[in-house]
View (spheres, rainbow, N blue to C red):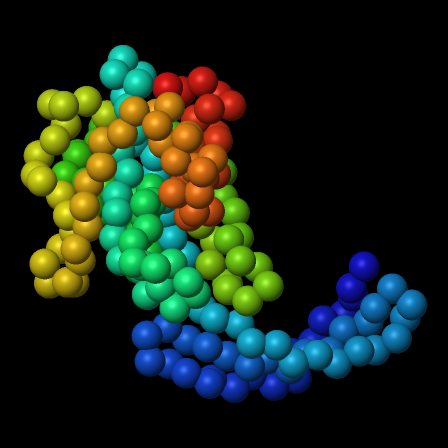
Length: 192
């Protein structure tokens, strides 16, 4: 058990896209010793993600887009298949995911269910992600989706059989953690 955490110094290393800080802190460890650590923490804000599913058709809505960090780390084309997601900015988690769902997928969803929150990479990133699920139907489609032009988003909307999405996850075609978590949630809870 760590006790008596005290921030000794916090310096901004980068504030270009989001904020990267180097934080030096002191704490008392289990043996009662005072220890000092320096760690970097990346603050990109909190976010929301959602899995849209259609129980009757046995399908889910996912997106495909280029993700530079994956390309740098060996994803040969940089394309990732993901559940719709977005940063909260000034919105609460539910308002954020409603807005992002319509922008990215073209669906205006009515009823959404929050299933949990999770830190996605707690060793280096401050973000908490709010996870949602919602049923969709063809009559909820109001645009083609694809993201906002002014944000230079280039998002492909995918409607996939749920069983195919699970297979894609199993063979490594879907490698995004939030998407895997939501697909497994849907499978465990028999949503689709």
